[in-house]
Length: 372
Image 1: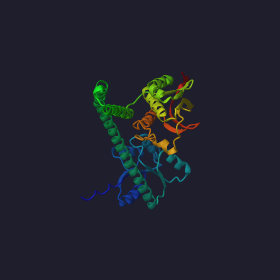
Image 2 (image 1 turned 90 degrees about the vertical axis):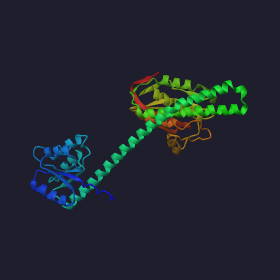
Image 3 (image 1 turned 60 degrees about the vertical axis):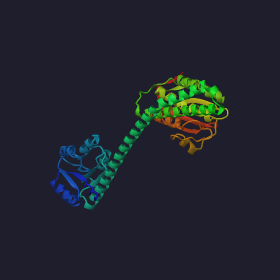
Image 4 (image 1 turned 135 degrees about the horizontal axis):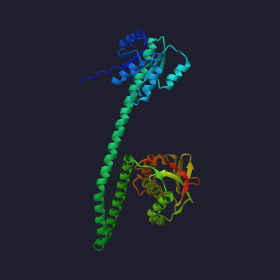
C-alpha cells in the first residue's frame, strides 16, 4: 500500500484590503496551500476557534481590532498560544517589528510583499511548527510510557514483598530451630540465602519508594532536621558501631521545607553510603548552608575521592562503583536524586574541602533562620 500523501498546510490570511487578499491567496493557492480568508481580526478569531490553521498571515493595520490585538489574544489562549503568526505591514520601522516579536510573532514581512520571500518564510515556519508538534507528541508518548513503566514496577515490587517475607521467615526458622540437625555447610548456605533475601527485599523496598515518589504529590512543610538525622543515626547504629565511624553533627540546622519521610530516606541513603564506602575508619561530617532561596545540606566523608565522571555515574540507577565493597542494589543515590528533585531541589557530589567526598542535596529554605 502506497504511503498517504502529506496533508497540505492550512493558512489563515487576515487582511482588510480585498485586493491584498486576492493577490496573496491566488499565489499561495498555486503553491498547494489550503487557505482560510478573512478581512477582520474578530472574524479571524472566530475562524480559528472553528478550525485550527497551521499558520496565520496577519495584517497589522486593520480597523476595530488590529493585528497586534489579534496576536495578543491568540498568545493568551493556551489552545492557540503555539500557533505561528507572521505579520504583514507597510510599516517598516523598528518599533512595530519589536512590538510584533514581543507579542509572540515568529516572523515579519513588509509590504509590498515579494512572493518568493513570502513563500520561503511560510515554508520555513510551517516546517518548524510541524516539527515542534511532532516533538511534543513524542514527548507526551514518552511521558505516558514512563508513567506506565513506573506503575508496572510498583505493582511488581509490591507483589514480591509477601513471598519474599514468607521465604525469609521460613529460612530464619530453619536456621534457628534446626541448626543442630544441619551440617556446617548447610547452615552456611541457609545464612547466605537469608542474606540474599534480605538484600532482595531491600531492593524491592527501594523500587517501591522510587516509583511512589514519581506518582505521589506531597505538601512541603518546615522540617525538624535534627530529629530526622537522629532517627536515621539510630537506624544505622549497628552499622556505625561495626565500622567504628565518627559522625560530627552541626550545632544548629538551617530551616528548610520538605516532606519528612522522604527527607529521612535521603539522609539514610547518604549516611549509609558514607559508612559503607568512607575511610577506615569512616570520618563523617554533616551540615547545612543557606544558599539564596535554598539550603544546601551535605555529608562529607574521608573516603577515596571520586573522579568527576564517577560523581555523575553514582546517581544512575543500579550503578555501583566500588564492586569489591558493594553490598547494596545501586538504587540509593538514584532515589536521593528523584526525591530531592520532586521536592524542588537538586542532589549531587563533589570533592570534599579536606579530601574525600561531599554528597549534597538542596531544599527550599523556610522562613525561620534555624531550628534545633
